[in-house]
Length: 260
Length: 199
Image 1 (spheres, rainbow over the protein chains, first blue to last red):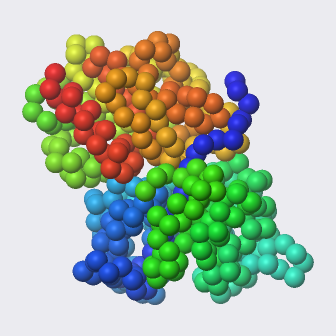
Image 2: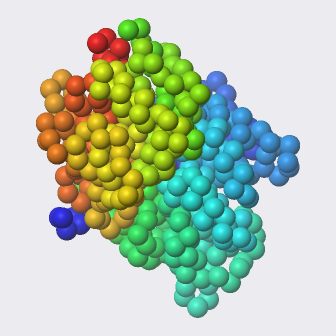
């Protein structure tokens, strides 16, 4: 068999939408949509703009709001022709099964997995590893490593983030969604050191999140830090850059991307 | 044949994504399964989620494996996606003890690469006339090695060239997910179904 060569798999650009009660939480600045709060319209628009995948994060505060998620997933699934991931509402295997049955391609688990790691095994065994993305929120600790945060970054666990990621791999995670809590929302660029540690040392894809500022951020996170995919929100929602602009510069830099 | 397909539903399979795609394409479908077996009047569409062994076990438990094999050998078109394509072959390294349908000669082998499974988009290059190159979405650890190279429809590159789709007579199979591969993938699936219904 041939030795592993530099694969030509495209690096993926993944816009992330926060939703609650079936609506997107933050405004998105697209001009041509009737309803910029409607996640289904936004999803379709992002697909048209060249997104490779989409992620929906349910940040509902109440049970009533969260109960609208499966229906939203069904509507998105009926309209979208690209893969999408749903997270924020997954605490049990049944939660995951419900969302996948409605048409989500993957689910992400975060705090629930830290609390009960066997949830990863359960989802992977029942649905396949490829359906199970483990989201890890990481923050630099004083000792020069990164620790895991849970509950939307409110609680620190003292767990070593890389060690936790390795455990997730062993339990059957298909991908790691790695968010730098230091960089999230900062638009200072991705935490390249963090991403590189994970992307170069784990045998599954790593999706980088937190800090995207401009097309160069994406070039760096793919070329220097070896991320397989990059998740971004404000940079696209606020219309600072388009996916086409980011992909165009990535292509110029020699990074393989799916053309818009 | 009108443009309609029978989607094979089995225990553990997930037909939702494919059904939504067919609805977007305006293609009618109905589900066939253990209780309502296909009769060959429509092409069979075999979606793919799970493992080779898992799917073959479900098909044989439901008595569908024999029905499908007989119909396809008699000329009913078959369109397989992902594992739905893989079960066409004789065996897979993923589930060494469980035979496939054996409608195509060859087997499935595992990628030898830094990251497995392959999750993401890459370019496929057409190996048969009248098909276009394009970008499609893969989620797989195993890929087919057909005995007859002439059945190859598309090739892709991940740690080396590999067969990404097959087409031979009334059989078509995609290792990637056309229903998840945007405009290009949806159009390819539509064309495949229309071709199958025309025959």
